Length: 290
Image (cartoon, rainbow, N blue to C red; front, side):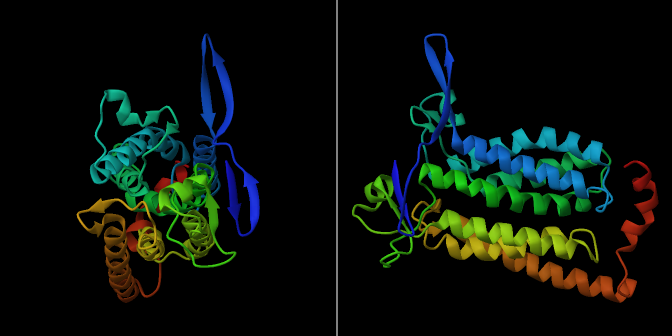
């Protein structure tokens, strides 16, 4: 596939390599490799920073290993609910087609990870908000890297840019849009925003005022960008005439901003600027288990 982006022509092949299997073969796609790499980088961040977040690393990894596949299933389920795709067989649920794997929604993965992750934190006796704080930064790492899988597949793009150089074009964008022209590389916008968010939230996390602060900051940071980005994407999941991801993003952004303000103000009044007292009470006990 020939792709032109910012005036540069590239040749992309969604298939990284092929593994022979008897009379057939198994195609390994760049999309999966990139997603896996993003997940690995998020785990590496957790490995290096778990102690600073007062989290038992071994227990955290146990929770992640169990939660990750469930989050992927939730991402697929979310996509199917709002995309309206009809399944002809059970295998269709997993998105395997002749052209590869398709049909995941990030918000489905986030919701699944938050919900089931919180449950497993309870089972493994981990402080839920501290785990969600470090997980929020992991989300941004995975999303920032994973969006490049969309580039290889030539998906997650927007409307025409109207520019003579800014944007991208390929046979896939032309087919979808119905005519030639550069379209917004939405995957790139989100990738840059998420990776920038990693540095911003990491900086904030070094001076957390209360548990849950980074999770709420993630809600504001990512919700703001995704809400606007969905307005120019051509493949938004719809709920009637409503762009569901845009509505959800703005709701998360506004709600998180309000809660962040309220909790920060209450913490400042009750603790006189020090760290959340509930965190400090359990800090010594948890660090012994790290």
